[in-house]
Image (cartoon, rainbow, N blue to C red):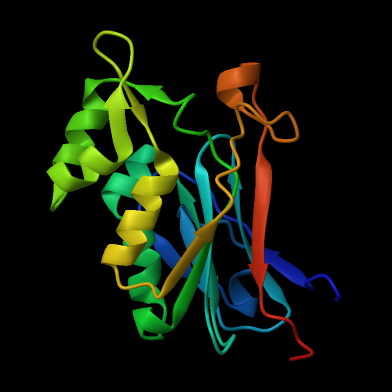
Length: 193
């Protein structure tokens, strides 16, 4: 398998903006937290530390997209924005969630709990992805939150190995290491298919 000829990079801001990447946009770095393409041989890319990287494609391999899912982007609708942008019925989509901070390591404050509870059907989502932590804190399961949001958006299949960046030293974790660094997640459509 050959690597892609070009890569669409983004300036990520923990938002929900999604852009379509085309050959003419490759040299640009727009502010966005999701990108998709139908161009073969060109990759879309997000970088993450402890946030969830998501790759979404259709079963026929005509489109592929990536999203950067920190808690702000997730509650802000970044996954839904990517699903909505793709010119394919959601039921034809397959999603993969990459390594992110796991639920045993991601303790959050009341602001995050309130944001999750403020979503449509937030109480059900909170029951699925939040559990009590130290006083005044909760542990957030980004994998479960992402899975539920994708399922709610109609995505046909979601998979993840639930690899924790904090506990697995193969991965970078800002919470564990306390220094800046990133991992890149790419998605592209092969030219030879």
